[in-house]
Image (cartoon, rainbow, N blue to C red; front, top):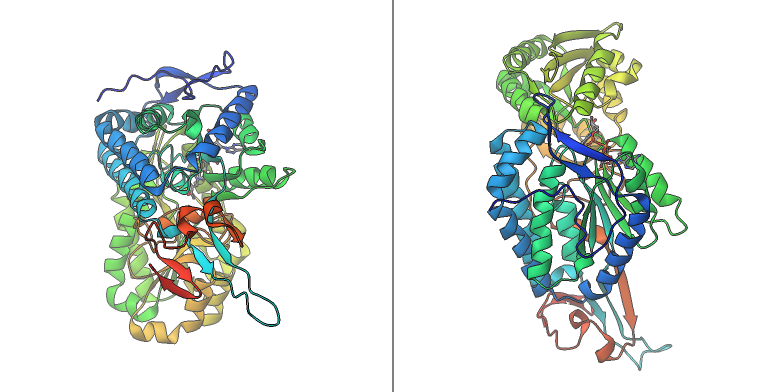
Length: 528
Ligand code: NAP
């Protein structure tokens, strides 16, 4: 398939205003602008787009799980067919290699098919039925039935660092569409062409599957104005966001200040502590250090799960670990980051560390690079220096990490307890290490959404049990996940029917279980 890029928002059937400012994607490897220019919509267009999404909701929410599943599968097939277009455009806009573009395409279509299977099965709605007991004393028990229902139109902000899997048809969009919610996507300014390719794939599936036109819109708009207007619109009922802490918290405030506040599911900053316990460090430290370098530099460190803080007991084994990690990072080639904003932010973060004058803090290795190319960095601090210098706890988004050495359990606990909420925490320990460090393990447990025993947090498995979320500020709502099938719950509300006639009930709650789904009937999980 060869997709022709139009440079326009995808809002089939709507007449938009002549348009706001135009901008182009930029190749971060050479700073050259890429055709075509993209026209931003203007704030008054948001009203029309939201109105159309709200109108589509009334129809789209009534589509069966089979119909929604077919729609998600059609999107996946279209994206797969556009694989070559994506593999050409995405590297040009992001500096990510073609292999990553093809791998992320596979992940994205896999996610769409996972949600298709979920809604085709149908049991995800958590249907509950408590049958009536008219003769119960002292009061009769009513017939009470409940299930999860779609919330309404959802606004999704594309992530800079996942142009496919957390963007136009990424996990937020797939889970919202699966739930029965129309989606309005706000493209990221740094990969407008990739967004349009995928947007055209979704739009084609809307048409071929007979979904209402407002089920999906893709809009371009920079300068915060359009994103803010979308979140403020009263017809929008939830927001999915991946990006900076500043952006996520700004949008949370906008959503909370609405006359009807709405949830913002924002995935923001995380430094993903890794704890390497004494026996493990002594016996396998060098191997762990080499593998850690691979995780720190994966995707040039631009993953939300990048391990940015490594905790080690001070001593000769920690020194060896530091040397091996330093050599491995120094051997890693320089490369370009996703865009000039992220490059500048990375260099600023390195500068904040390299200009830090503090006892117990040292720069082990630093390659800020030149122009578009940046390199790796490694710093080391004592627990005392870390606790005294808050700058060391900030996310440095890129291929760098910080070693912290502790001398006793109190120091270790102080460092862990000083962490803000994180997406992940990782423990490397022998059985004996784990037994001797229960308090540290529990402290880490309380601060993260996913606890790993061994391995590294990068490379998130997309599966039913995955939790890619965590306490604030790693996400805005630590009860949720943006990866895995539980992500669908974010875009639903619980709805209860009391003494409803059969004809007024959704199929999922009718007597005889016409859809054959798993339900909780009078406290028993059953397909009957
Ligand atoms: P960003 O600046 O937060 O932008 C993400 C999206 O939100 C963009 O579409 C942006 O619009 C929009 N936006 C941001 N602030 C907004 C506001 N106040 N009001 C309305 N819309 C707003 O994130 P980014 O460009 O992806 O990366 C910037 C930094 O975020 C990185 O350097 C890194 O530190 C961090 N980051 C962290 C993660 C993570 O998972 N931990 C992932 C990505 C980025 P525009 O397109 O118009 O800018």
